[in-house]
Image (cartoon, rainbow, N blue to C red; front, top):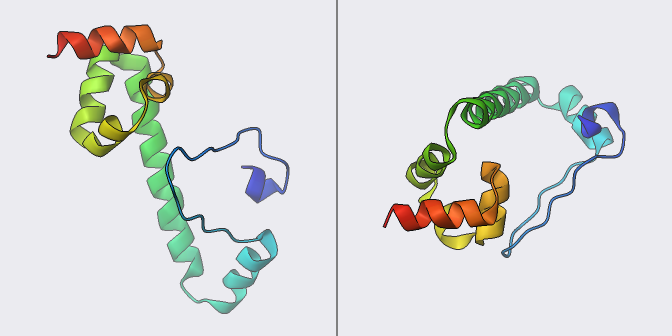
Length: 108
């Protein structure tokens, strides 16, 4: 949203592991629309994927229990569960770290 409207973002991202960051300026992004024939198709597929993932996440937060959300995360992204500190997993799942600890303990 901030990129599209060229306003400062309300969120920040912090990496907890080494990562490579790809970035593009708004001017270059707009230039790609002029130069690359399928740029709009590429961007639309990214937007559709984002919307789909966001809808699934919202549904999970609204309709699944904390335990169900954790089990779903373990099934869909086990590497994330293995390599992410519990406080970040709990935040992502919308619960307190203590609650996540109890959920993990009950699954053993």
